View 1 (cartoon, rainbow, N blue to C red):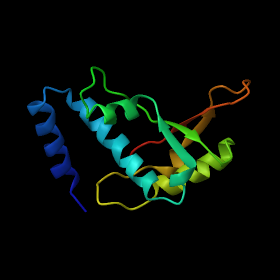
View 2: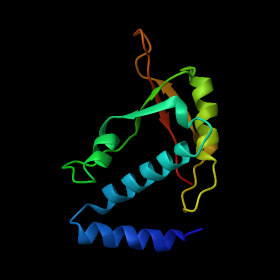
View 3: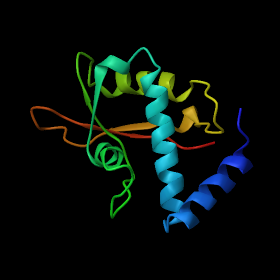
Length: 128
């Protein structure tokens, strides 16, 4: 596994070289590693990526404002908060070759559009 210090230094160097805000680079790194976990999980075919992180990827990071979240559309999977908490607990607990670790005991799931025909959820992980 790559060391956290090594990754942090490389991200800082990348930010400096590319005239980016370091915190934005850190956020995008965590989002990308989260998407990697999703891509190798058993749930990979049940979510469609949309929103800012998709555009960020399409434009190879040449985006005026860094995104701070991941927007997904679930397909063929329950959108119930308890189910999504289980799904994302499984995804966040996956071991990968990076220093990212999530605190699963603090994972929060909340409704954001509860009274609409298609309701959405916010999933709030915390890094360890």
